[in-house]
Image 1: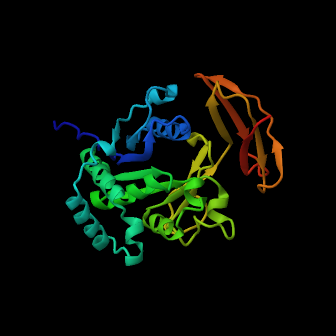
Image 2: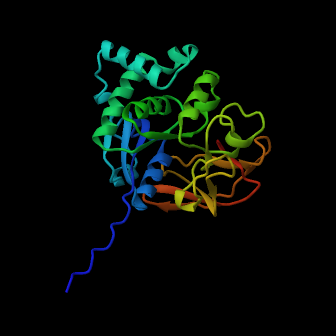
Image 3: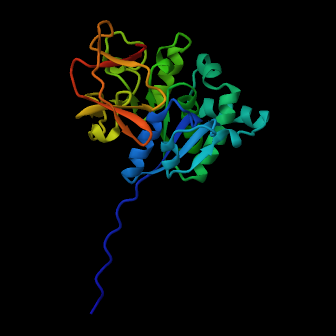
Length: 290
């Protein structure tokens, strides 16, 4: 009697590298919560930070992460000759226009990209996702090209609206991304919005700032621009430390008229948690002093 064949192995999830500028950072609990949620879904992750953060004071949720944390600056030791060779390679491989070469390939970013690419290869990362379209998204785009993997990014606010942001460079970064996620509908659909428009990137998704990923509806990725890849299903969740209680949360539909959001917080794991039910009149949020 022949033994029964072994069941087919489940498809292996690709290993994802989360690229951030500094880790840990007290103000970026939304990134930590996103990583924790993905870990809970069984994703294989590693955190690839460009620089070391202050680890002496951290939120408790940082200690709950299971993913390894590595730092590109620890590997960013390439000499000037190697950096120059790499710049020439990237200009050739990415067909970077002459007028964009200085903006796209500053030596310190190329050096960081070399260190990050080394970590990507060592960790067998198949896709990198960067939070913020500024330094972390920039270096991730270069490192992904060097390591031969895909990359994506989440665009927030200052990284796309600040007056020092060069729209040509932003357009280049977004056009290199496999997909782009942004935190408000304004960034992706508002007429005349400066940065994240349909002509900039092959796919734009939406995860509003403060969202818990488990409250989002995941739709299969699209090959062309259409509705957001991620949308809010039930509520928006805000989390902040117990020590930061002296503020009021307001919402607006148009960034002009603001109303107070009733606050009934839940204390959990040393954090205040506030869940705001989905409401078409609550598109934007801000914190104000009482």
